[in-house]
Image (cartoon, rainbow, N blue to C red; front, side):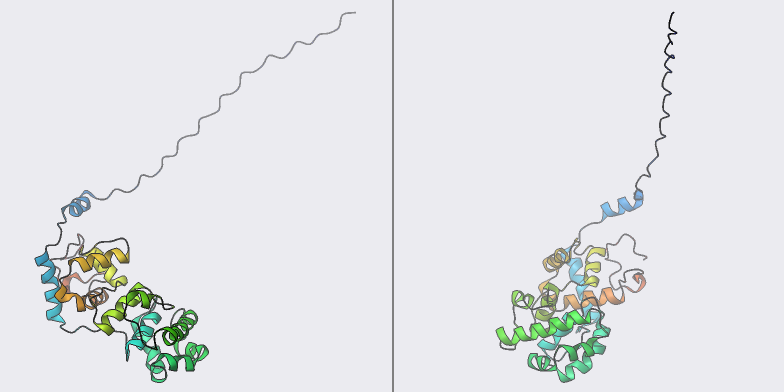
Length: 254
């Protein structure tokens, strides 16, 4: 008896898969042609123009002062260490009473870290800063005879002190021609194109290179004050700027 042999079912052709539609990626926004042109058209500052800038600053404010209150090189050092990520006004409110009882390294150690925290608790990062102030006071007594050292490397070796701290102390306490670059000086150096740089050190070295020696003692004060009160971060006050005719910022409003 013959067996029923099943014929294999015909194979169906595979259904072609639909190609996924390519999703268009947004293209990066192009800078307006006018902005590109203006950036390319910026000419370098001439020595005569830079001299004019600082002559105007000097005429408007012959004796600029730092706004951190202090009594001596030690209290200046402490105030600058406390001012990191804090305003000068906020530091001054805390240190007025503090410096009445602790204006030397030994007095600060006698006060102690816990009591120091109570004086500076309104300042950001006050616990870490209190620890640093006690440690730097101890190091000043142990290694420098209780005096603030007069070299950048020695100041930078103190707990809580960096290059900016050293530059401020060397300039304000000892009359050195240093350039302390804070957020204001960094902004002014880049915005005006006096000394553009990606880092504070680049701006510092650039400013030291172009500012005439006769202005260097007070230059960082003038630039800080200019950035703090005129060349503001969000809404620069170009209409009252002393150097608006010389400034290289393409977006200036005058």
